[in-house]
Amino acid sequence: MPVMTDLGKHLATQLLDAALASIAGLGLAAPKIALFIAGSTIPIEDCCDGLLWTRVATQYPTDGGADPFTEPRVDFDLSTRAVCFAIEMGCLWCHNNVESDGSAIDPNEETTYANRDSDYRAALYKAAAYDLPPLIKPCSLGHRIDPWAPIGPDGACSGGMLIDRIVCEAPFIML
Image (cartoon, rainbow, N blue to C red; front, side, top):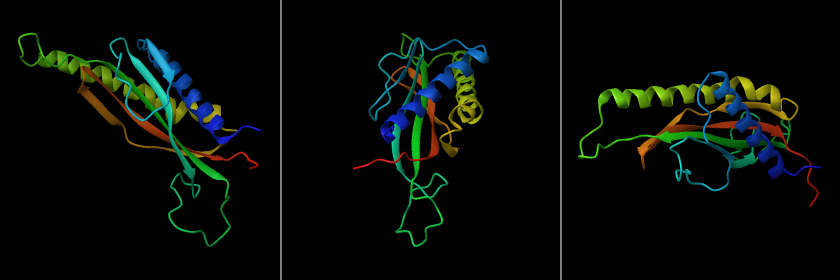
């Protein structure tokens, strides 16, 4: 029987695959690097040719609506085995923000970056909201997508990330 960390990794991998398919389906260039990662920092080491990532940000017992339990339970109407997996997904690309002479970049170039980042934001939302649910239906009780969090242009990268909070019936684990 799988343990919860395996289920979280499976959900994140499914979301990564759905994002790649959504990006291709919208006719966008595929990021050169697409991977499931661990850690808590944004992986901006090599974003120039595109960086797409997913990771399990956290997991916690939930009330069934993707919110964590905040107080001791007094009823037993909800399953005690509902767990929320917060799956982070983000995409970054290069973003020039200073010309070689130290001046700001041309506004048209800035608009091009903003439009590009918006296109990838749409692809990632499509993957999370429409493409992923049928893939995880056997284990998912529902999900909630947090608002898009823009990133950059920091470190010559821009893009953003979202968190898909997926509620699942946790696998039984014998201790």
